[in-house]
Image (cartoon, rainbow, N blue to C red; front, side, top):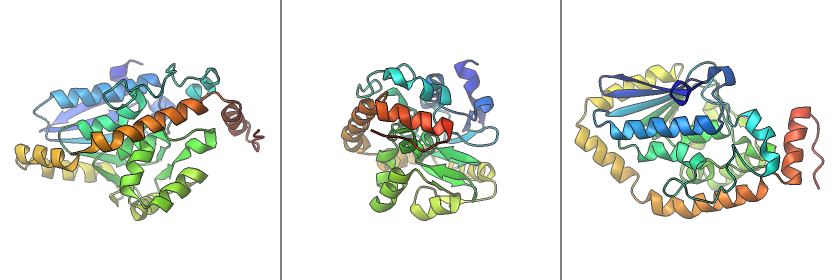
Length: 266
């Protein structure tokens, strides 16, 4: 599957619909999927005709998070072949962080339409959008701790802006799942609806009818200062994650997860 096949862009009357389409792997995230999201974001940025963006996942859910093959290959100390997560390869971000942050740099509003599941990195991709419509029964989780890791797609950064500190910490420390209703209550989703994609299209069309100059100005003001605020947090996230990847306890966490047994940590 090529990068262009993993993330597809449809255009309709100044609205771009960005679809994660790796349905055979639940839209899970490997290095090529991260790259595909970034390339889609860059394509949108360069298209001045676009006035609103919808970000969704084809198939049964939005995104299941990190690909299991990537997890199994972490023993060597890399994620998807990347061995220096602290290196800012994309402005203030590494490649994984930029797959979510790129939607904040897109100069028009981005609406995530989320259904089924948005787990780990999948939730973090959605958090990079400006607006999130979700089904009441969508499954969410800040799941990285279960694998002996921390969120490394910018999730900690975005959640600090959106939810109470104690809620963020509870979700990160436990890795427990929560549904769409809870996501709205916590501040991590905008609203629930039975058909988030239809709702996203309705809002996107409404936005596309407004002055594109005003909309772009609003997006600039809404995201003003994020680079300066986020840079040290992205760096800390990457540095801490790099120190965890491939360690004895992190490897044990993954093995215990796949073997469905309690972990035996040192």
